[in-house]
Length: 273
Image 1 (cartoon, rainbow, N blue to C red):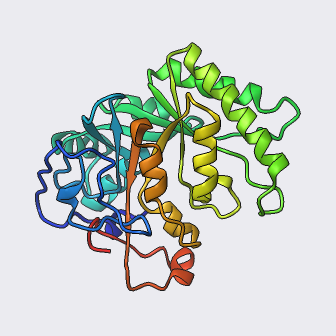
Image 2: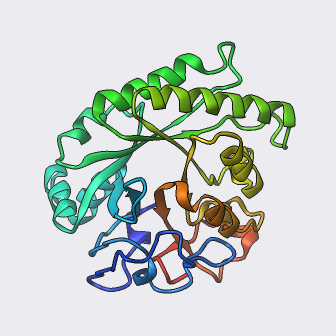
């Protein structure tokens, strides 16, 4: 998501935190139905994509950005990397989302922002069923002090649902959850926009949550819409409401035909789509 495509609705947004993050704030395509004030966050003139991370068992939501957004803010505002980090902290951002394999992870750690979420692609279809990669994922989270990780499961081989492959994914997710639990790390899945992935289907996300009790949910407000099937995120949000540990906020231009969303990626300010 380009920074210039994602703007706050007003110069300054102060949002109450009493509203549970799983409140009825999305339409049937996963888009916020009202202004960003309806969302459970504290977003103050943040010129980039935002995500939120919950303290498990509470409705206290903190604000983070994707790590690449720090560079985007620096470029757009003509300031240094460290100054962009400072400006983000000043407006209430306290963390960042980052790939666990990002070569600049240690650099991001020096910004004063905390790692809120590490994400990574798994390989549960590999010869070791993804065990080595899962361990490396958890070990990195421990090393940088990140309390939660978000896995991206393997794509279906032929891009179509396959129950045998899905069973391997479930087994792999269980393994990762067990490894994470042993180190005090929360493991999550998100609704995902890649159409070949099981998590681009609402029904498979629910089945994963149902099949792996220790798994948490990262609710992305736009990815099911981006997948282009018209799946409704609300059944997933309602099912997982006590297990939501992370949220990615995004919105799309409602005037863009669904068939063109993947090609055009018509992002807009939250609440304006």
